[in-house]
Amino acid sequence: LSRHKKHGHCKICGSYGQLSFEHIPPKAAFNNERFYYQTELNKLIEREFKEPEEYFEFPSKGKYSRKMQGGMGAYTLCQKCNNLTGKWYAANYVDYAHQVMSILLKSNGKTSLFYPTFFFPLRVIKQVVTMFFSIKHYGFNKNHPDVVKFILNKESRELPKNIRVFTYFNLVGQPRRIADMVLGNISSHRITKIDELTFPPFGYVMTIDSESPDDRLTDITYYSDYRYNDFIDFYQRFNTLPTYLPYIPADYRTKDEIIDGIRKSKKTDANN
Ligand SMILES: [Zn+2]
Image 1 (cartoon, rainbow, N blue to C red):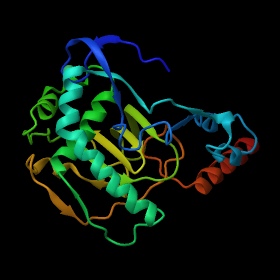
Image 2 (cartoon, rainbow, N blue to C red; image 1 turned 90 degrees about the horizontal axis):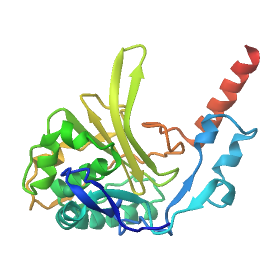
Image 3 (cartoon, rainbow, N blue to C red; image 1 turned 30 degrees about the vertical axis):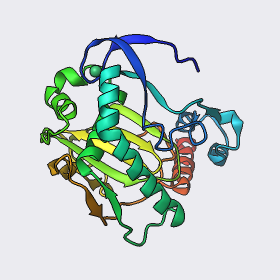
């Protein structure tokens, strides 16, 4: 994977110039070649194969997996925004991610006890929003200048009220990097504008003018009420959810539920 110089508009401040490679999540938060594999599980949805079980042989089956050298990321931010957000937010985020990964691995993903974690809530939510800036299409900064201010002023606690951030723990499945999706609910006529970023040990969902897409997610929008230097000990337990389908937002079905769903829809197709 070549990482030569690229030019473009920074997805946060909008300035044009040389872009730096942004690891999403930060490289030190387990985002390196040892942990990240990319697959083409969307083929599962296209029902191209006969036996659904085979898709989950991962990552041992090289057929569907590809090693990403150096971790997952993209050229999205200018050097200045990259450096500032790295210094202000990412450093604490990395530390927090290590605490949570350690808890999840020790408990095998079953967090039945309340383990304490220690972190700066405002810095964590700002790192999360920074990562969403990087994965969203260019233009989010122009349409949401208040969110840009929230990120580029480290003391700011003014996350716009129509934006909500949710989280869960994640240990199994695929990484998700889904931006600018719109989910429709036929019965309620509601639409949900959603972005989702999943990378063990966390999953994050950001919504705009929308409600939570799943009751198992925990709303952490209130982290933005803390001050920059507020450091807390935190005992809340989040749900640990699997993400087997990398391109479908807010889908937390188990492997068995997905396979069962495929079998049922095949049966329906055969009967029609
Ligand atoms: Zn910038």
